[in-house]
Image 1 (cartoon, rainbow, N blue to C red):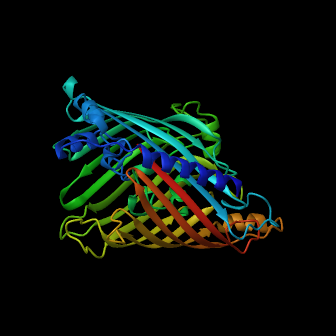
Image 2: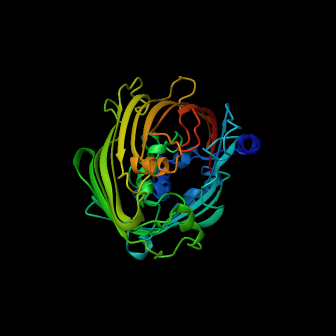
Image 3: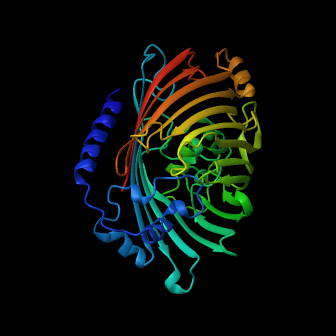
Length: 434
């Protein structure tokens, strides 16, 4: 609970600072904003969306961003703080049985990315990205508090931007799957995203080398695929503890995995509703320890769909009600979480007076490995077979560049082994986009 209080206090202080520190933005033109936003990390092949730089604390005050953009330079600092606590506490159960028991700082992340366009070097469709990420967490089992390179990569488009190439060090979970609800970083993410990570796909704190190639066709169709050095089969904690500043090309026992995804991604337009459907998978020849002995390779599959049902204001086409569903799978011989199913409802602009707010409701089911259950049953340890959850969340646009997200969640069987019937959690998140 103390960590959540620290999260709230720090967030309140920073929110007040952000509100008091806003300066006049000047007269940045739409063309200048387009150039500025083209020089962000998210614009270089990511499916995860962060607020545009018009919606940032520093914006283009005194023209600093547009001046940098004239030299093909983009800078995007960001702070994300997430705290969670459990109303039930379950203090009579083993400590750290699940995230939020007694209060946890899920993540305090300080992030800055730099983008440099190579136009002046005769490569108008090419950019270099560099990101630094500092993460703090009190969650048991999370990687240790760490500052490391979060991305260092080269991006280039070909054939009128129909082909995209990216190579370097990147968290592929931002490029594939859709980590957050609807791919929007101001909305919540769920446990379903753990399944591709179990199979070795890199996440925001692990950045092994990769090469991705994407094709963008007509009417929103896309296909992307890549190769990536697997995250260590010993887990994310081992990867972070043994990967220095995050740029080690090799890791003991970790082989090259293959990842691919196809989908249709249509942005909302006046009269045209948002549609995003995708399916993909990871094939990883790296050997993982099997629950019943021996070693096996790993893999994961996913299918997700999000659709905009209503568009009440055609002048702001993103507004309206959305529905979505997901299904994910990983083999149960080497993965604890082996199936995930999710249904979601979310609404952009729920109130006319608050056009940038968002509300969401998500229900989900996780299935635990039968082999893991059998192995522990042989030791007379009781385990859960499934995990059910429901979460209601509200994302409030506090002021320019600041989002405050609160969520109340219910989870049946929050722990695989601790024999805990249910948890009722409260989550508070703050996003500062500078």
